[in-house]
Amino acid sequence: MIVRKFESRDLEAVLSSWEQAARLAHPFLAEEFLAQERKNLPELYLPNAETWVAEIDGAAVGFVALIGNEIGGLFLLPSHHGKGIGRALVDKAREVRGTLEVEVFSRNSIGRRFYANCGFEEIGESIHEPTRQKVLRLRCSASD
View 1 (cartoon, rainbow, N blue to C red):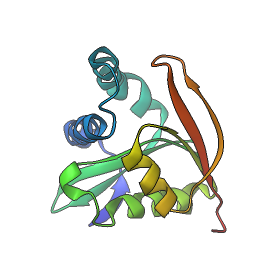
View 2: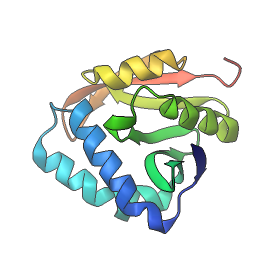
View 3: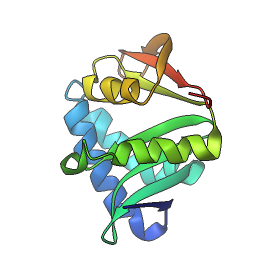
View 4: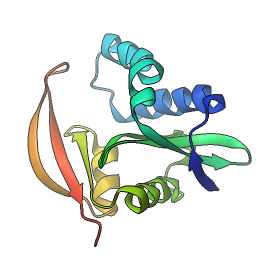
């Protein structure tokens, strides 16, 4: 497994990993919201983020998108969960950005557990206006 910069050829794999993981971790989100986010990913989010992909045998299986020191998204194909790939993406993000922050839906038990295992701690909460869902703001300092 390698972690490398996103390339345009990765787009379909990134969209697939996002969609599969998002549906698994966010069953509480409306279909309309997920459909809009799938459209926003290539048109809005990826062009404005520094994105790294995890590649296995020539195929992108997940990604982390950074906006400054914030993880805008970290998603893996569910078949690759629990294999250290997500941790490798967080490690790359910490390598290039240092202290990291991320927002995760409070009802996303998969994401909350993952970030806790990576050393993130809760620093606040708010309401995600488009979905009216509670989100937690987490931070992992560079020195952890």
